[in-house]
Every structure is written in structure tokens, then in C-alpha cells.
Length: 127
Image (cartoon, rainbow, N blue to C red; front, side):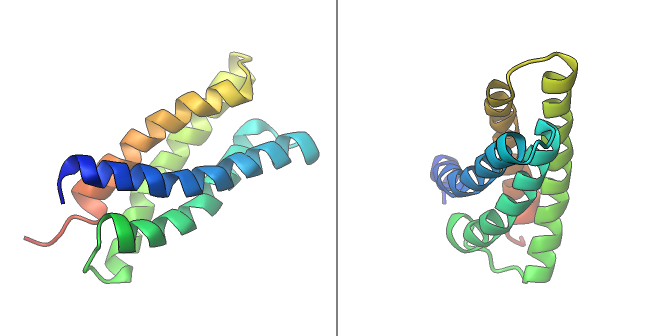
């Protein structure tokens, strides 16, 4: 599958995980009084489960074992989680930016990181 088709599928799958993350962000901040970075980080982790399964089956059509694919995928997403949560903390808590605008910016950065790591390492077919 070519790069643009994979990126389109990855983005479509990611919309599902992003919906989970943004729902948790809203509930966490507005209803539970959580700091935005914590709510976003929890949502990121919850959305990653849905994204893993859909990316494994639909985006990359991986033939790897779940043990190998999931461990690599979650290594990529672990770094992505730190990028997401750290940037949200910096933008919202330190620079006092609106948490929704911060999350939109950080989601774009996370999309690029997660796609690149997933394509080039986590789900890369064996040669």
C-alpha cells in the first residue's frame, strides 16, 4: 500500500482514538476538575487501544504477532504520550493557553510522530 493511502487510513483510524481522547479531556477538565494534561494523557491511553486494533487490521494489515506488533506500537505511543502530555502541560499550565487550542496543535504533532513510528517500525513488514 502506498504512503498516501496508509496515511489516509491512519488518520481515519486516529479520528476514533482522538474522539475518545477529546471526550476524556472534556469530561476530565469540565466535570472532574482534572488538570488538562492529566485528562489528555488518560484519554490518549484509552484511545490507543482502539487505534492499535484498527491499525493492525485495517491500516497496515500486519502479519506480525500481536506480541511483536503491540510491544513496538506501544513503545512508539509511549513516546507519543510523553510528547502529548508534556506539551499540553507546557502550553496550558506554564504558558496559560486554552486547553482546546493546545490539544489541537499537539494532536497534529502526535499524528506525525505516531504515523512515522508505526509505519517505519511498529508495523513494518519483515523483509
